Image 1 (cartoon, rainbow, N blue to C red):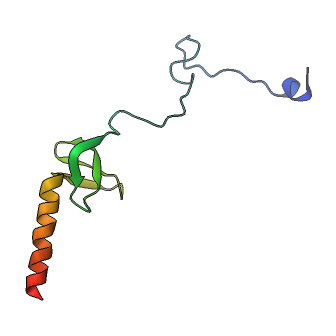
Image 2 (image 1 turned 120 degrees about the vertical axis):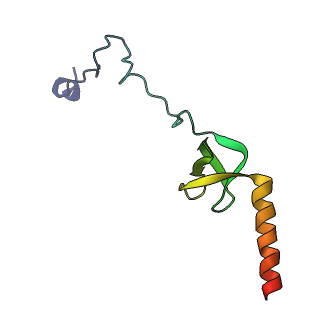
Image 3 (image 1 turned 90 degrees about the horizontal axis):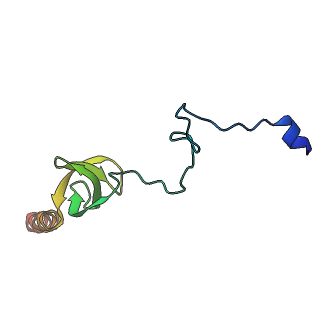
Amino acid sequence: MGILSDTVNESKKNCGCGKDPCETYGKKTDESYSPGDEMEDGMVSNCCGAPIMDVYDGHGRCSDCKEMASAEKEEAYYETAEIQRLKDLIRY
């Protein structure tokens, strides 16, 4: 036995499920995905037009700033932005 194996007791964590690997502390994946991290197709955030994720009931998380935002259809967001830009041009 080596020096480290004599001094370090490596026991597997188990939540009590009795399974190997444990359901809670067992094998971990490298992927940091959780259900709901999908981008909503055709929807963007109303704050900056970035794709929006985790949309529920018309709201989600902006993929750019990670803040909560209202979800808008991409066409509507850019149409509104173009109208606002034209209004700003007319004012000056």
